Image (tube, rainbow, N blue to C red; front, top):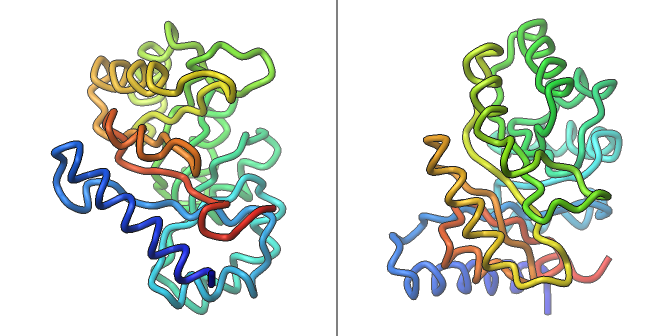
Length: 219
């Protein structure tokens, strides 16, 4: 199956999941996760009409996306991997959305860079719903206070919450927790769900799903 066919199949599954969850059509946006794939592999997906993409690493994204964004200026690029403070300047310059704000040091670094560069990019707070020590994300019980800090003290544009449930657990309770936390914070956007569980995420209120291998194939 060609990459364009896989893209259309994922989009059809998203629309079907919206319908079965009694949600409006196009309530869910697709972030096509292009990490590890080169520009030549990504171009056919752009040509098929996809405009929102996700990358895990700033350095890898810098190698391919400036040229792709010049070719197709309406692309929206999301950082969906952990951000180190020493990469904040590069991330703010390249990405349109950062989904992985998860601690005060990163929030302050991004705020300073946005002010310095005159960019107001959209941000998500990553929540470690499974409290996994090896995984990035703020603890669920600290999420509301952290969102308030980002908004009130740092004047950051926090658009929503993001999570990656534990690999070996039912993702449903994690998606439900993220939706509950977003409600408590007055946030309407939820980035949750990947190739293996995005239909479940849509049932729990995802507004953005991050799908890579179902579109691009195995890494």
